[in-house]
Image (tube, rainbow, N blue to C red; front, side, top):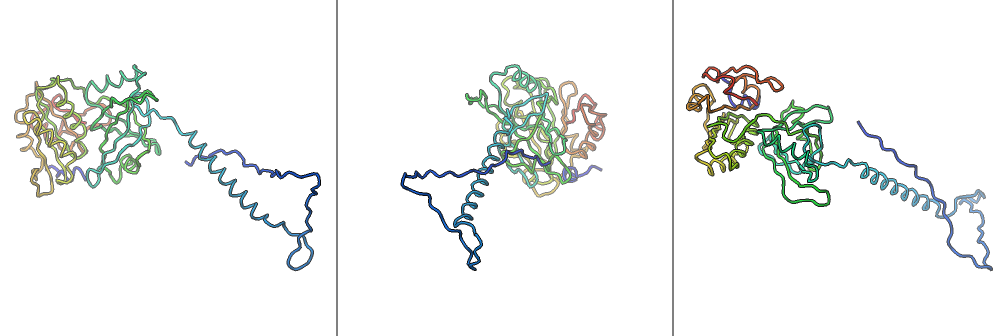
Length: 362
């Protein structure tokens, strides 16, 4: 018996080197005339009349002013040193090494899922680097390796959107753009907790683009997609890519998208808008485990439902894409091993007669 959708989806310190702060010798700037003699004072005695020498009046005030002034200078020095030592980040994609991208926005999408927008610059004068990035992105769906520099681990995320503005910053010779990542916070997910702890202005190290699924316009008659939770990310990237490409006018898209509840459906407004704009090319069926819902079926994606969903599947012209939590993949098509391997096809899709070449797992 398959698990429900809800079950699938829910189941150091750097030392700063500082220069010493030296005390300053005070010099009098008051001119002395030829007839003027230096002013002498009698020793100051204490209030007991013991004759012991005390400190001249105002000494403590002078010391206090020097301490405050020295502290202020020290703080300014530290601020200046910190600013000078800040890395001059380029904030651009590089498939060969990690580069820092600045977080521009955080937008909560559900109770535990957030969209993170990062700034991505494009160098106008580094054509080789720009061509490499463009070439990878043009080949199909792509992703980014996101690194947690605190524990030196990484995880691969698929951007839901990516754009480069034509507005040019001539001072730096860059075209500014952005990419969006949708990340769900898992209690035991180190990368997801790391990203959810970031603040706007922070820099996160990323590497990519990394080609995950090659695609060319018109390669398939119909693309069937089965997604759960944040597994909508590669599907959304593909849907927007296909429907916005003037050279890809015949490919039809069918999406079966499961979430725990209606409020957990990620990018619902954007998906509905695309379906309204392309009713003859994009079909969407939402599934939820917790009802009631006016826009989704409260049901499990079992064998009967998937048979009806893929009834018109043509192995020679169509393909099935699957992305979601590990338990979902195990039940639908079998687990996906770490790395590029797809692993053997198992689960419901195998029972329905699908083969390895018919299915791609993210």
